Image (cartoon, rainbow, N blue to C red; front, side):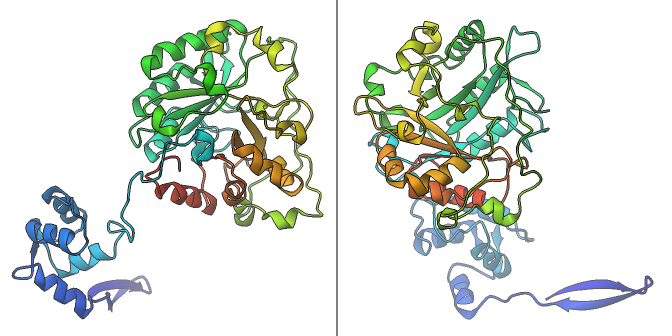
Length: 425
């Protein structure tokens, strides 16, 4: 029982007792079995972890960490109250982490991948700062796909990372690359994919190729011809960095940025909106056609695949480990499976919700060999997220989320990948 006070009429204090949960009898008996004189020492706690909790590899250091984490007056052990607090606290989760226990020897397209969207943003999509800090935080959490939007800097002689057409402040690309190299394998040894949204001139593309090659060196994945026929397995890609982007085309200086003011929905999404609409609700309804102008990947390829290849700088071309494409012709062309080639397709949240109603079977068939990435709609200015279950049910490997965001959808995403050691599964 602990004593608490509250003020009455600004001058008097009343005192009352706050009831605290008392350990049940079976917990008391268990504590007495591993304690002496009312204190469970480091050795006693270690024996408890091994014999009762079945943590066979528990050490004295593990026991000491538990003692240090529980606030009490005994530094060399825990009393009954602290022991009870430990048992029902966050430090003692109901399911111990099993680490990576799934078979990781199948092609990459058969795994769900922990994927970030606009990984460099510290907050909202319109005016927050761009930084390497959210990238570092995401990698520490176990995120395996980092997205970088690369643009020429103000003097057109270097490369920045920023959300184009917004008030976000840029960060240098080289800073992001160095941070990725330093933190890529802190949480997991499995590969990190960097998806590049390229808005560069050919000379700056060559500069990016040099930056990437010098920064990552031997850990950069250099694909052979066989990698474009079937994706390699995660096990063979351990501690490798993979670049994924579209084959770059000839840069057109006169190309105008599309008007981004046509979005009819603005403001913060409600809690239900952040959770996303379920598929059955979409039938018979007409969702407004939003222009996802802030993400160039929503545009179809304007040139034939082979034709665009001829315009590539060789160094930049050979960086691409996962080829991203979106051919002309709409959903039927996008989801057509090529038996001799595998690719990555990106689709906005809204387009995907429509596609699962009209092309559900084609999506499942496409994701057996190819990688599909779904990203949040452009009106999620507050960096909220959608319902990931819709994507996972249809085999979407890269359900891209605003990791710096909030809400139940993000909690579900984090929980999904906890099951296999915070990696692809």
